[in-house]
Length: 320
Length: 278
Image 1 (cartoon, rainbow over the protein chains, first blue to last red):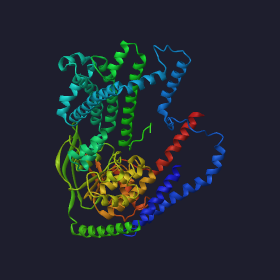
Image 2 (cartoon, rainbow over the protein chains, first blue to last red; image 1 turned 30 degrees about the vertical axis):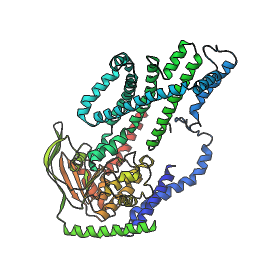
Image 3 (cartoon, helix red, strand yellow; image 1 turned 90 degrees about the vertical axis):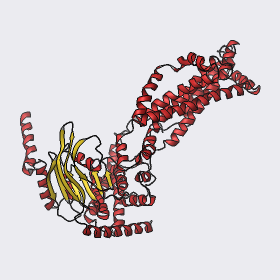
Image 4 (cartoon, rainbow over the protein chains, first blue to last red; image 1 turned 180 degrees about the horizontal axis):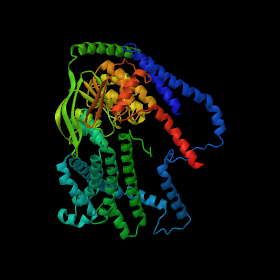
C-alpha cells in the first residue's frame, strides 16, 4: 500500500518538474533516479502480490478495530426511545402506580391540556427568558474575562485567581446572599444563572488560550504578524476547541441553575408549575415539566454540537 | 491549466535572468554579517564569537553535532531568540523566511490560507503552490497532507514572501528518505529560480554536500571549517569527488571513517559470540 502511494506521488512530482524544466535546468539525474525508484518496487510488488495474498489468506486476519467504527443513524435517539417503550409497557401492564408514575399517554394528555389552557406556554416563555438572559450574560462575561486574562499578564494576575476563588464556592450557595442583595425578583435568578454559566466557559477558554502551541507563536513572529492579526488568526482559532467544551458545560449549567432557582422563591415558570403540582400531588404535571426541561437541554446541546462541528470542521476526531 | 503553467515558466525565466543580472552587479553585497556573535544558556556559551559573512544569493549549509549551536545560530539570525543572553554584531536582510523541521501549518486554515499567513495576494500564493507541486491542493486541510506535501506547503509559504534570506532548520529531517531526495531537488530548483541567500541547518553531511555551495561546520561555538564546494549541479550522491568533501567534513565533525574497519568489525564480533556459545 505504501509503495503504491509513493509511486503516484512520484509521478505527480516528475510531471511538475517536466512542466517547469523547460526554462532553467535539466533535472536528469534526480528525475531518472525517482523514476527508477518508482518503477522497480511497485513492479515487483504487483508481480509478487497475488501469490503472497493467496498463501497468506488462511492466516492473516484483520486487526481488531480500536476506533468505535461508523456511527449508527439517529443513534442518539435509540436509548431514550427504548426507555419510553419500557415505561409504556410497564404502565399498560399495570405494574406502575398511576399516582406515583403516570402512564406516558397521561403525561401527554396533561401536557396538551396545560398547553391549550395557556399555563404551559407562559411558564415556558418565562423560564426561557430567565435561562436565555443568564446564559447571554454568562457567555459574554466568560469570553471577555478569558480573553483579558489569557492575552495579558496583568489581566491574568487580576482575573484568574479571583475566578478560581469564585469557582471554589458552590454557586447555589450564593442564593441566600443574592436574595438579600437583589431581592426575590428576576435579577437574582439571572445573576445566579450567569455565574453558573460563566465559570466553565472562562476556565476552558482560558486554558485553551494559555495552551496555544509556542511553535505557532514563533511562526507568527517569523511571518511578521501584528499583535491584532496574531490574536485573530492564531490565538482565537486555536482556542476555539476549548471554548466549545466550556460552552457545552455552560449550556447544561444554565438549565441546572434554572431548575433549582424556580423551585425556590418562584412565582412563575416551569419550576413553579412543578412545585405547585408537588403540593397537589399531580405527578403527571411534574413529569410534563421534566419532559420540557429535558427537551430544552437536548435541543440546546445539539445546537451547540452542530455549531461546533461546523466551526471546527478542520478537526478529525474519533467521534466524527 | 496549460496557459497557467506557461505563464508560470515565463515568469520564472524572467525572474531568473533578472536576478542573474542583479547578482553579477552586486557580487560583493553581503546578506548576513555576524561579528563576535555569542549566545549562552545558563552561563554555558553555545555560540562563542561567531564571525560569518554570507554573500547575497549564496547557498550555505551549516553542519554540527546536536547541541553544537546550529539552531541557536539560525534562531539568532531569524531574530527568534528573545530571552537568550548574548552579544555581538548581527546584520540580516529585511525579508527573511524560515522553514522549520515541522511544516508548522495552522490546522484550522486551508493550505492556501496557510501560504497567505501574514501576506496578501492570492494569485502569488497560488503560483507558489503550483511551483512546489501542490496545484489543486489549495483547498485541502493541512491534516489531509502527507509529510512531504506539508513541507512543500511550508516552502510555498516561505517563498511567497520573496525572501532575500531563507533560513531552513533541518527542513527535511522528519521526512522519509525518498521524499527527502525529491525535496532536495525541489529546494535547489527553487533556489536557482529565486536566488535568495540560503542558510540550511542540517546534521546530514550528504544533504549539505549535494545542496550547498558552501558548507560550514560549527564546533565549540565557532565556525570550525568553511568549505566551498565547487561542483556543478545537479549533483549525484555517487559523485566520487564529493566523497573527498564528505571525508573532510566528517573529519571536522570528529567522525573518522575507516571503511576496512567498518567491514571487518562486525565479522570479528560475530566470531567472538560464536566462540562464546560453543
